[in-house]
Length: 234
Image 1 (cartoon, rainbow, N blue to C red):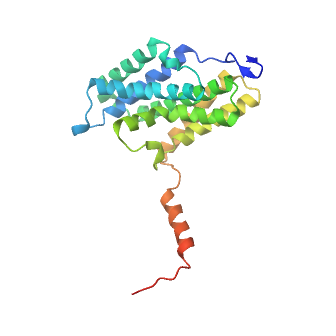
Image 2 (spheres, helix red, strand yellow):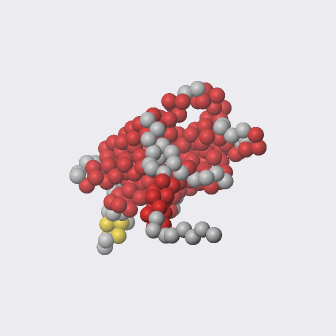
Image 3 (cartoon, helix red, strand yellow):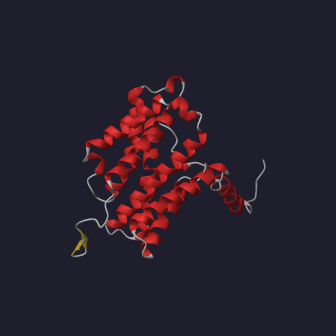
C-alpha cells in the first residue's frame, strides 16, 4: 500500500511458518558445518547453537536492515528458539547427516533458495526496484554464511573459488523479479525462484562448476601491460 509515494504497508508478507522453516533448515546446516571442526577448533553445544543461529537468522537480519525494517527475527521469540534448537538437533544427528552427502547438498541449496526468494519477494513487496531487490535477495541468501565465517575467523566462502553459490541465488532472485514483472503472483514466483536456485546450486556442486579464477585474468593483464618494458640486466 502506498501513501504519497511511500510504502506504508507491504503488499506481501512472508508466512511465519515458511520463515521459521528456512531458519530451522539453516540451523541444521550450521550444525553440519560445525561438526566438521576437529582439534582446537572443536565447538561445544553453545558454539554449535551460535553457528546455527548465525546461519538461520543472519540472512533475515541483513534483509530487514537493508529494507530499513525492524528485523522480523527479533520480534518473535520462535526464531531464536527454532534456530538454536535445530542446530542442537543437527549436532546430535551429525553422524547420520555425514553419511547422507546428497541430502546435505540438497539442504544447502534449498536454504540458499529460500532466503534469496524471501529477501527478493519482501523487497518487491516494499516497492524496491527490481535490481536492488535482487541485490537484497542475494545478500539474504549468503548473509548467514558470511556472518558465520567472520565469527569463526575463516576466509569468506563466497569470495573464493568454489561451486556457484551467490550466482545460484542471483539467478533465482532474478527469475522472481522477471516473473513478477510479467504478471506472475509473487508467491508462485517465490516458490519457482527457490526451485531455480536449488537446481543451479545442485548442478554446480555435482559437476564442479565455478567462476574463473581471478589470478588468471590478473596474469594476462600484467603480461599485456609489462610486455613492452625493457628488462635491464646488471
